[in-house]
Image: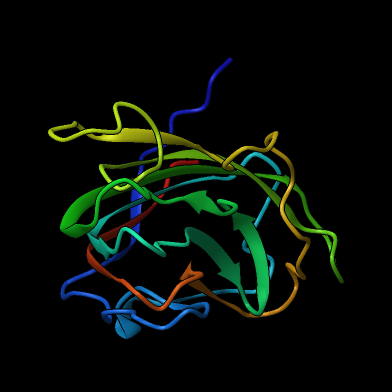
Amino acid sequence: MGVQTFPQVLAVGKVDGPTLTAAAAASCIPTPEKLTLPNNYWYIGRTWRLTMHGRISTVITTPGTARFDLRIGAVVAWDSQAILLDTVAGHTTMPWVLEVLLTCRAVGTGTSTQLFGVGKWSCEDILGTPATSPKGSLVAMLPWNAAPALGTGFDNTALNTVDVFFTQTAATGSLTVHQYLLEELT
């Protein structure tokens, strides 16, 4: 028999995140929205939905790759893997949407707590077809080019801060998060 639960908003971006331009991993959400979880927050089956919207700019010659990851403390608990960016056309301030569903599959101390996550990133700037303009949004199923798997384990008994990082491998573009929503579903 089912249990009645109600989604709860854990964090919502009230302002834009930083505009990231370096070829390095960096937090992409607004600083005030970094959530600190209490000790023993996770239980098996607890589920989150992460939704983000923003804009990205890249160049044709060296767009590199795009990568999102959710960190709990210093641990990458979910990773989109490196998403190939479009090498056919440069893109300036193109909109994108990231949606990720995360479910706790194991809990414990040390590195025992693990999340299982899948998602999608919708953006015109993903390498794919059609390769000529005008083209609509393409969707990258995440993790990119890999089977879904458990993320790196973290310690559920400690206080942990939740953050979302973005990495573009080439410092020739930029990314800004305009909307950020983290919901607890169960």
